[in-house]
Image: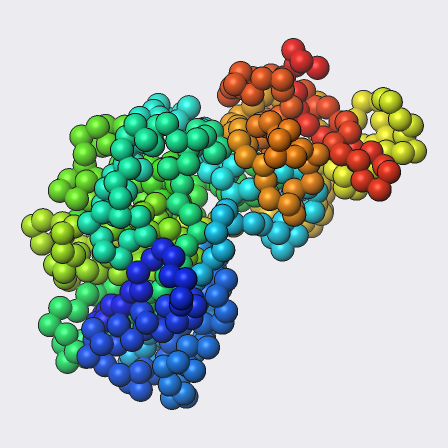
Length: 380
Length: 147
Ligand SMILES: [Zn+2]
């Protein structure tokens, strides 16, 4: 039994001072129900997540106490992707016909603060100033640039593209383009990454309604099918955040594993993808994730950006809604936003940022601490 | 060393030999698969067994990758001695120790702009901060020409 997405809902990302995270989640959930032409009472189940805005299952107080199965999901930056994967399995197993995946968040301003002991690291690691995720991102892309000849120019172009795409997305946080020169002149955060190459913690909500494929047409003329969902954690030797010592023999990242598993499940390859969302916590991540997900060889990103292959009208548009850079990162909602965007593109409903020539197959990838990736493949 | 050993406390137990005239980082080597870990731990995430020896790690290595921390980290968890006024960007990197592992460490240098991949660095174990009247001792790597 295939699984279809029949309803999409989003609360704009960014800062909404007069709404709690939970309110933004409820807003997105209602939008998704409305989009599907379904009611909350129709939902057999829901999987929901929020990292900093309370328990997702508190949504039932807002949406209705219908007695449905509601399970909270907590899986770091892959929380949204994991909620979707759980919903997919619930339907795939035959246990349920229809349900919701939902995520929301509301983070305080400024960089994420890390408690090393919660991650099984010694307190000393934070004391000495190494428990900072931007350092990991800086060190990973620094090595990658050294090995594969990626230039600072390409780091800048990633940010420039995503902020430009954000100007076409009414739900994006940053809707103002940032020029190449402004990005290049912005302060260094963790070398080689500058201020305008990083996404920031934010707020927002996203929800989607899923059902058995054979029931989808009762609700919508444009169902989007989930052809594959895969979540993988790190193997020994992959280069991950907060690794106090790295093995000399480097292993494939969880992204490589999740991507391969998803393509195998869907029975297609990277060349069949028409539009993609790749985790862009910062510029370097998008570059490395292009190859880790199998879309190009290591080092080819330099040429891809010079030739604009990942622009909205390019051969593989990437992060058409502005990605994490333009939308910010409300952890619980971020992975679902990616799927929301690709589903909109496949429906042909992406407005000013619509990818031309009716894309038929899409791809999403989320990556998060402490080293896990979630991939989905969608088709019309 | 300005103060006596009695007044010096390692930042955490088991990270390095202390007190010592030639301090070394302490790792563990899996008896089953030979993988070296830092800090030392009894279980092996590579082969899922639980039998290892504590070993001393190499004193010298090469920078495998690095970054420069350009802003004062949040407190907590950070406990460095700087104020926003005195903060200077500092290096953090993975130092490759031949045939062992790549250890993440702060890189102490007078000139962060000269840090580069492949640079030769050496372990130093020295005072990091003062806490409750004691000197807290931590480990760093320094470019060999600055040691
Ligand atoms: Zn082992």
